[in-house]
View 1 (cartoon, one colour):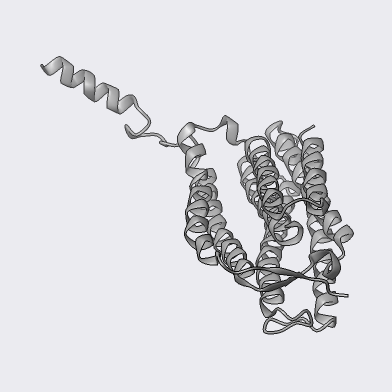
View 2 (cartoon, one colour; view 1 turned 90 degrees about the horizontal axis):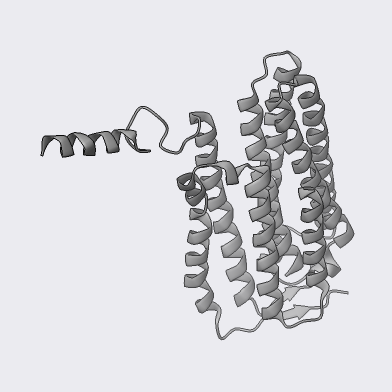
Length: 207
Length: 88
């Protein structure tokens, strides 16, 4: 009886949730970044489902190909995906203990982020010039511009904060205070921003 | 290599966006390509495929919740029709 209890105790202590180690098998910083990403994903999920609902009950909806410059939007998608790929290379370089190479890849990622933000700002100015506002727009469906500005605004803000985080991490890498964990966690955030754009691109611009 | 696949999927999604097919089929196929893209990004770029299973399952929670939320709200839209406005 006693030995089976002891065996049971041993089994529990050795398992994932037995204590003394991370049940999710990862460092606390990476895990916290994942928790944050999951919560942020829920925010964007709420926006996109609300947009889907508004659009489904709306009797009319403008044709995106006639409002937006789809070439520019596709270019933006390409830039963000490429910057994600470069970020993955930066994380690889950091893990291989090559901070100089990691720094260069980080700079390229930041440049990609800025290009994206510039294009998004251009899109916004083009729409605002045509008379689009949060409450009304020239295409007859107020929800159209409202959902555009809120969704792309929140996403653009995430890109901007991602660029800020990457800049801090890059400067630290250049100063030699780099840590592969930090670069990896910043990379996780950047990939999340890319994932959100994949959803926005598909559901707002293409559908 | 992953990057090439992502570009292929993006091109596929773009093609779908312009394809003259039924709206429901278009929506379904776009959801499929989007899911493929995010699975690739999450598994390879975010290293999720090397993580422990409980962390992987944790990251699927928003997707499950999204499906639930969508399944609650979408039936409320039945009975209305969306017309596409030709702007210019």
